[in-house]
Image (cartoon, rainbow, N blue to C red; front, side, top):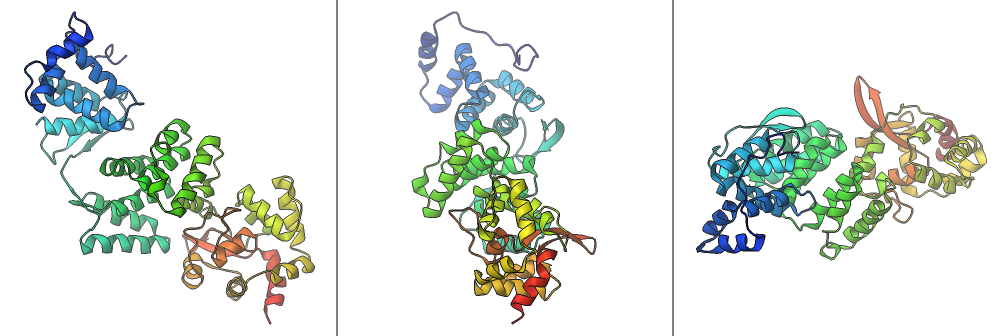
Length: 419
């Protein structure tokens, strides 16, 4: 198809067996550069390089090397191929980036010069320039990363993204900061922006288990089981700590079953649930609708009600919270910190902004809300029990993340906790 559309410039093919053509290419090639040139001059081997570059099942590094060999060492033909790839919607974005880098190496474009190409169906420009990658960044880079994390905890994701984007276009790349940026993009559903950052991290450290894990989780979120498996199979879980090994096992299960329980494989995807709309004064029924079915089941177990189906479980929970005896029994099972958080919310009208809750009672950032990995924070424990809900509410024309108690529970909890 690509040849038919003129995307691949024509070239001559030898009338010879493949192995003989390959042997001829090696003759007289005394250096690596001479060998690469000789390989590219063979039509049969040029065809082989095309097959490698265009085969999505091949390793990315092999595909990139094949693209570079053709563009750099096949003179005008290779440069025409690279330019055609940049402007074609038939070529995947990753291969276009490899072509752009090769065109800079070949001297068609200067380092830092705008390179026109089509990305996601739109005409755009990119620049190829050398940057320093460091795991021990200068103080200003590390301070910027810390500030971005602080802004994220305050619910200011857009400001955090802006800070990290500035680092991405700078002369020094700090991989942990770029991983934060990629996950922020995913949290904000900016998937087209997240993927190039994750792929950049992969190019920096192709075997890094955390980078491969996040790429596998990304493709799982995109419902692409084949690509998710591709990255999962490249992970060596023994390179991580016990917590990583547990997350790896969960991710593997999710990919194998494609069951999409978002909270079980990524903290940031759990936050997608926190971002659902919620009134500051929600009913029990409204709050439960924001919870995944697994959480509803856990709440039913806590309140000791039947939950054969989600609908049955929600109805049972709505009914039970209007009875004083079950509420009293529930309060008796709470820890001192959980009771303190409920009192804190009730004294403020039944709700509070989440950043205030986190500051006083601890973050939920690292909690997966699984049955076999229960939350440790007071807010996480109460949420899983259906005693509070978390979501985004409109407050003074701003969408603020809040923690709130269902209206049906407020009066009875107030009585029980007033002493």
